[in-house]
Amino acid sequence: MSGWSGIFVKNLTMFQISSTKAGFSCCLHCSLVNPLREAIIQNTMDPKRRFNDLLGNPFTLKDEFFSLSVFNPCFIRGPCFIRDLEPYRAEWLRGGYCIANVPLSDPFGRGWLSRIRSFPKGGRLPECLGLTVCPRIDYASPRRSACALSGMVFPHGRGLHERMESFWLIAYLILAFLTLVQSILLGLQAWEHRRYGRSCMRGLSHHRPQGRLALFAPCKGIDVDLAENLRALLSQDYDDYEVTFVVESDDDPAVEVIREVMAEHPRVATRLVVAGISTSTGQKVHNLRAATADLAPDVQYLAFVDSDARPRPQWLRVLAARLQNDAAAVTGYRWFMPKRNTIANLLLYSLNSGVMALLGRSSYYLVWGGSWGIRRETFDQIGLRAAWEGTISDDLIATRELREAKIHVRFDPACVVASPLDGSLRDVWSFVRRQYFMGRFHVPDWWVLAMVAATFNCLVWLGSLAALAWSLFGGSLPWWIPGSTMALAYATTVFRGRVRQDLIETFFPDHKETLRVASRFDIWASPLAGLIGWPALLGSLFSRHVTWRGIRYRLLPGGKTQIVHREAPATVLLMENRKARTSTKSQDLPPYRKAG
Image (cartoon, rainbow, N blue to C red; front, side, top):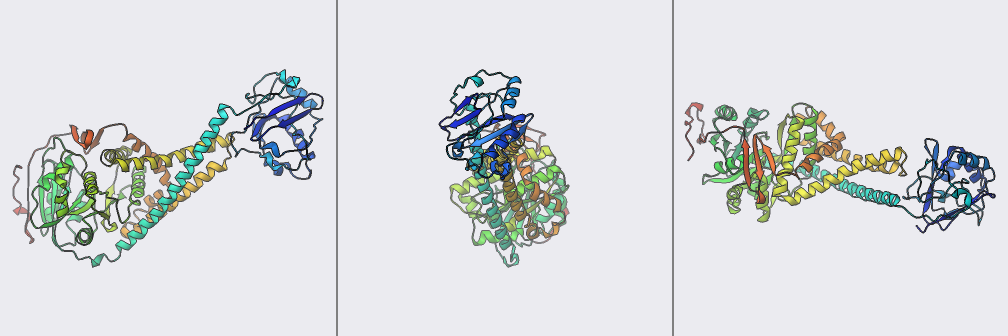
């Protein structure tokens, strides 16, 4: 802005604007508004035009004052003498008030007087008389000004406050634009995810893989519906596989459930390994290292599943078929099944659904440890069992090793497993923070990407709400800018939620009614889930400690693990039941024996 000058001439009651390129805003006492309106209308070429049509309703009520914003008044020309304002001027000065004329800090302010282009040539802009032209004064600051009577000229430029408003407005608009672009791209990805999921779920019966497969299921404690989850592992329609259950101690409550399920399915070769206490490795990783220490020579594929997962009967067959035909490693993902429609369960359901929609045919080397498989030769080639030593995460270490070896990992929607869910808000916080916490140490690039994307999204929502409140309570920003931003962002999130929830009919048609409330929550309230999950993501930034299944770990530089505290000790025992492929009675199980 080049600056402008205001000249007060006492007798002619005239105010002149000159050298103006950007604009200004001023505040008028309510007693001066109507005369000013009449004066402007009288000096237009079409006096019958409505004032609000000319100015775009520039007056905003603030207590007993009206705010008038003027944008680029260099378009306004023509003489405009206001001889009827002297009584009001006297009343104004008796009240001891002065007026602040401040440059317009944003081009979106109310009342663009540049719309008035019909003043006669060579004229002047009417303004309230006897009011001080100041660099910056509070709108309603009680102050008697001698300058108003002296005819002095005050140069004026943009102050720090106005420059800061412009900076925050530009930053907000840029951030909103980037977030909307990101949201649109995520919508396209969700559409592709749905298309790919539907295509993979067609023709599952055509898969006929061959080869011995070893399935490993680490267990600790009693998960929700643990018995049903384990029965699903022993009810797969793949003929040539064995299941290894792994626990930390024979005192683990899961041991009794495992033995009952094993006795119910004598035709499936099963064994129970008690791995013992880990001293320098995550307990789950320690259990897997113990279970994979002595693989049978005829095993061609290795599969891993969590105890809280309940796969469909075709799961293992599809996984083996992918490993046999076109992938060295295959991964699925979880689909939470809330047992109750509590806010905690619904929030975690929505967060998980958003993450799953990011997966396509290629998982970008990402492996989810609750449902994945790998060829035996690839497992040995990358030295995964050795790489697990001293770490806390099984799947992220597998991700790292496969990426370093440039070995393709395929995501197959048929390997998506149901996962019963019933937790508290504290459980949700702990779960989400733990996921991001492990990503921070083992796949930092993906963690940074998730941090930036989630932060952008949340800042736009919070910034839009703040901008809308500021606009409605007297700010210069029009309400439709943050309102439109939130409407577009919300529309894209609803679209994404609708697209990904359509897959319920594809993946779990029998659970459509059960998931109705959770599905609607994800469609209509996913922004709320993102805002609540964001603090958990930020929480992964500030600590090296995490608690997982009753054990507190500290992650050291390089991803190594130190166990800080565990709830209870465990004994080191091993029970094995490697049966032939014919039925065996449960009483024929061999007794316990110590490992080693």
